[in-house]
Image (cartoon, rainbow, N blue to C red; front, side, top):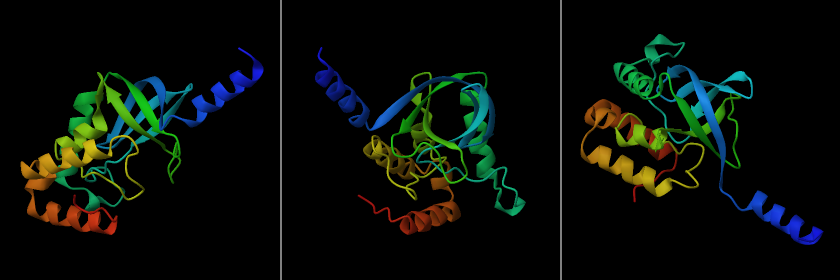
Amino acid sequence: MNRCSMIISMLLLLTSPVLANAGQYKIIRIVDGDTIVIEYDGKYEKVRMLCVNTPESVHSDAKQNIPMGKVASKYTQKKLTGKYVNLEFEIDRLRGHYGRLLAYVFVDGQNLNLDLVRQGLSPYYTKYGKSQKYDSKFRAAEKQARKEKLNIWGDPELTKKYLRLKSKWGQREK
């Protein structure tokens, strides 16, 4: 392969994927329903799961913590404790405002972010943008959880709260 072809191939590889796979990482601890700590490049890093926002369970303002937050945290603990996970990053946003890694978390081949929405433990969280790869899957998962009134969608006050927030995020129903 000549030098020009090699450069073009490398440019295509670097610019074409929407998501980048990061590899397998050991779970160190579960912070709450949507945040974990992993061993990443030889140090401990917080990971904020993309496109989910579970109710609070460990907020510094105790009034923000609600029972459904504990349900979401326990669910994430059950799924991840003692496991290794694969992370998938969106190319345009590796870290968030607080310096945490932003990723889709895969455990045993399953997208935990989608699973949290499917279980009604989080709305499809689009405040900082839609999922570049999984938008339709997130929408379908939330629609089904709402239809079945699972967890947050089974509580009229939480449903009202999340629908109001989704409106603020600019997410329209399809």
